[in-house]
Amino acid sequence: DNLDTLYRQVIMDHYKNPRNRGALDNDSLTIDMNNPTCGDRIQLHLQIEDGKVEDAKFEGEGCSISLSSASMMTQAIKGKSVDEALSLSKIFSDMMLGENPNEDDIDLGDIEALQGVSKFPARIKCATLAWKAMEKGIDEQK
Ligand code: FES
Ligand code: FES
Image 1: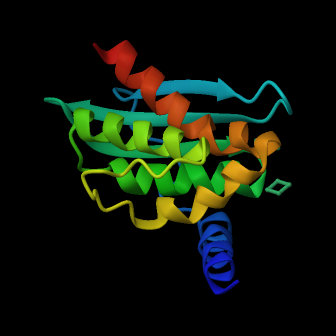
Image 2: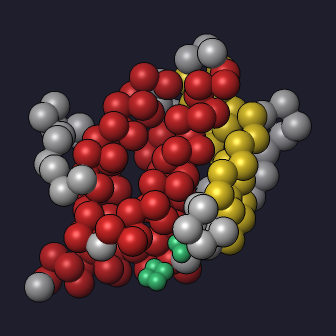
């Protein structure tokens, strides 16, 4: 339907024009994460200061779902507190379970476009790759 078409356009836009693709300074955190089912790998760079995600960028290769998800994820967490970033990650993983967990009506922005991925279990690991990397990075930072 129309919503699917809109979502597909948002996904392809992030894939073709990725936001925040590249590296950060040496003093940033770098997290390597691979999707074991296909071997694709992304590298996430996070600049976290005083409990806030000052910057986020990513490198690596993968399918359109994984790269668009990385692009959307970095866009969504930039400027947010670490706690807000983790809440978004929780909402996203619930979304991948086919749930609609956004009880607090947080503005999900483009992330919403990936909710249809929950219907394709083989692709869920693609969509969650960058989010897992972000959670790991925040965890290491503690
Ligand atoms: Fe990779 Fe569809 S996004 S096969
Ligand atoms: Fe490898 Fe999607 S097929 S990350």
